[in-house]
Image (tube, rainbow, N blue to C red):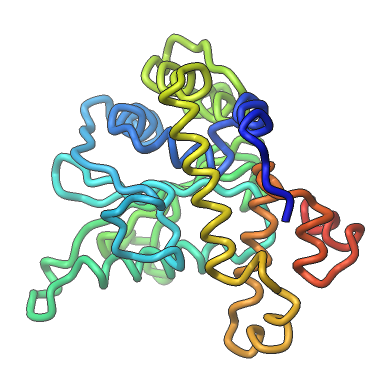
Length: 277
């Protein structure tokens, strides 16, 4: 694997955007940023965020198998898991279902009543229109087929994308997710934190640390060490697909070269490049 030098990391940081996993993790580790984002997407200007756990947090008890780009605890105790996704190579609905179920079980007590099971939002931000219905935001409701009545089981799934621009404030926020710098006065906390991460020594240090953690995590899970072996042993356990997906994310975030990733995946560079689209 080609390890980036400090100067290469600095240059890469300049190119990162909020939609990139490695940058969003650092951006979201700021309560004011998450609060600003959720106030817009959930259309609640009084919403408060009391706590945030990101993927690399030492308080993350869920493990990397449960995607925790940013797990927020709102002022009323409701959980909200924010996820960002650039690659359209997964079953996104089932991913949301799995992660929400995992978080719910982890945060539940053995003897508590089902009335006390936590309420939860999942906000899924993607670089593409998942449902291809031409909307910036989609709210997935459960309904009684026979009557159309909405059923509330405590889980709200909201899908937002950067592809469709409908002129709303949400679409304006999504536009910022594709930018290397933000100057929109409507989102001061996000713009401020983004500038800090890219221009201050402390911010650059945070970014470099997260980059290293992503690479170390990939090694620990056997991605960089030999995913080809996983093809014969891991597929039976359903593991290699997840590892391949992480390889793709590492390349998209600029932490790994496509040629190196292809070797680790047991593919030609041309085959691997097709997965990046």
